[in-house]
Image (cartoon, rainbow, N blue to C red; front, side):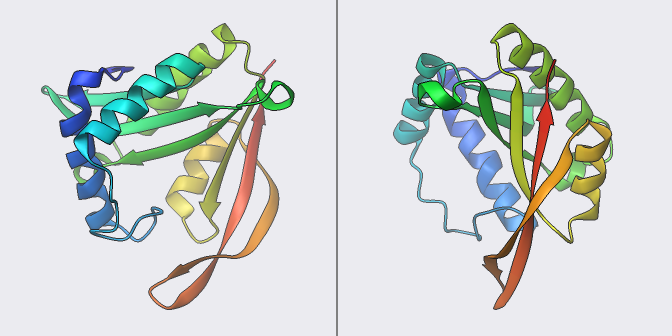
Length: 164
């Protein structure tokens, strides 16, 4: 089931994010680096709801197993765009959740008047690249030495999708 998150799910959502951080080196945060508290997560969810952004969660048997955040542009010149962040627990990957999250995102974005979706992805993350390209994103550029992961610099692709 794919749906918008509720503030009451902040604790479970945060726990799922922390678990994803420990499962992969492909996300922004290292294990135990995420300093968000449950009250801060509740506030973030409320702010997203107030400013026209959204966090979709993927549920399996009542548990949160993945997410997709779409953070809408904050100023008039970029309100037509949204920055995308996505993560799925390793046990749930390969089951179509990523595609389902992006389909839900597309419907939401069109209804909200968003015409541009943007994200970044590590250049060596073949699975994510495959998903993003399948969902209509194209590479728009490369961020050189964007991240430092396990003592090595990693490049990221800027990717975007124009909605019509």
